[in-house]
Amino acid sequence: MDTQQIFNLGASVIGSIAMWVLKVIWDEIKAIKESQDNLQKDMAKQVVLKDDYRNDISDIKNMFNRILDKMDTKADK
Figure 1 (cartoon, rainbow, N blue to C red):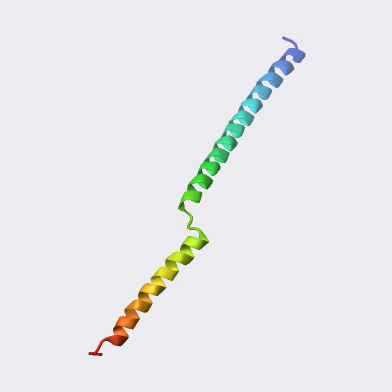
Figure 2: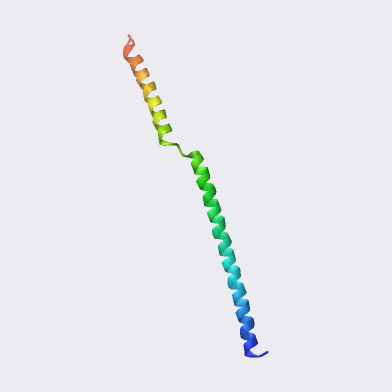
């Protein structure tokens, strides 16, 4: 085996290893992107919309106001 064949064999082995590493990295990046997309879809289901939050807070304030009005009208303060 002469030096050119050894060099070609070494370059092929190093190239194959480099391509395998790049494929593994590419697959991991793809999996992370899919995971991120799934997370965004799940977050959209869990996030409270601003209008819903305002309506809920308004309902709570109204309940507190009714309770306070009842307490003010009690005769045995």
